[in-house]
Length: 218
Image (cartoon, rainbow, N blue to C red):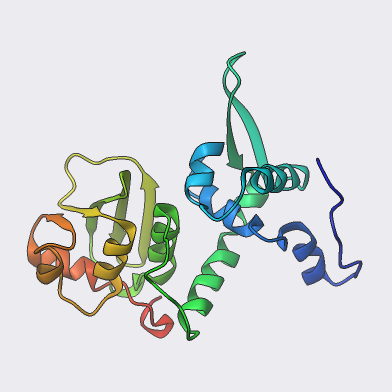
């Protein structure tokens, strides 16, 4: 590990947590790994504001803290991926709380860069599970494919495809975010903002599960 880790040097458990994940970019690196292992280049693509040196350092620090594991993809080939440990995955409630808290604060600019993973996690955080019907939707965000499955009280998102999914959405992450969280009906968004396949009524019911108002989500 390069450099010297800074510490608050307090016995407070919140300060201890921030010693581990409080450095700039650290929690966003965790975010990019929350839906499964990724290679360095893929992580950096989801964090365009970070330099290669800083990302390397954060990954080393998170690995030293027991939150990230580095794995060889092919023996002797030099290809590596990074994945979260159980402790790293345990940070999901922190990310969820930050999503919901941030959505209630003024000043959010939805026109700025949104990574595909960050959009999927925001949907996971802001879905109104209590009124969710049974939906299976493929979401192709900036070329990355995800499958979302909902049911009363349940929401699941994972990387991949589902050939038999009843709903399919495709577009830039910003366009998809505008469709899922914006005021326009799905039919209007599908007329040019995004691509959509499926039953329009079911698609609208799916879109209606998501709101940037925390009190409307569950």
